Length: 235
Image: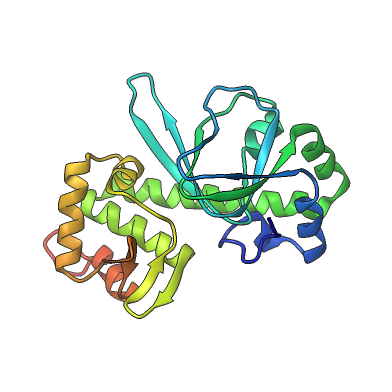
């Protein structure tokens, strides 16, 4: 297992110097997990946190009725479980490997000592957390104001801008996403998500290549989000 090569947008590593990156990579021990593994369990005590070096994980929480809410994905360069580690509280969510992941396991004590000793890492952590708050607030506004189709469009647009890689057909979202993932993320049924995806494909606003979602034109997808319900441009 090597070091992290390319950090995901908005991750902790995007705000760190090469020296601080090397320090964090050496702060714990390395593990590799196949897709589907449960890495952290909601409600468990917090004794460690995870630094993702390769692959993607999904963050989700469950209510008393068994409903699952997908709150996000984390990839290379992201710390996972840092809030529970800071407060010493139980895990607030489940974390599953979406695909094969490599990570560094850092104990809570070593993490807290690092924040005291290396203020540059502390500042970078605050910036990562601020990015997540802004992302959650933007999504909350979209989900409150729009129907399922536009919620799906907004979610895919955000992921394309943050995690898209240029391809022949447009921006390829590197995170593996199922329709159930999207349903859990926007608070909708899988059937309504399937209808929304069909509508977006018919307008050539999204596509699929090698089991990854593609946004052919960010400008067109953003223009669709600016349309009023009757199809006229919003003022």
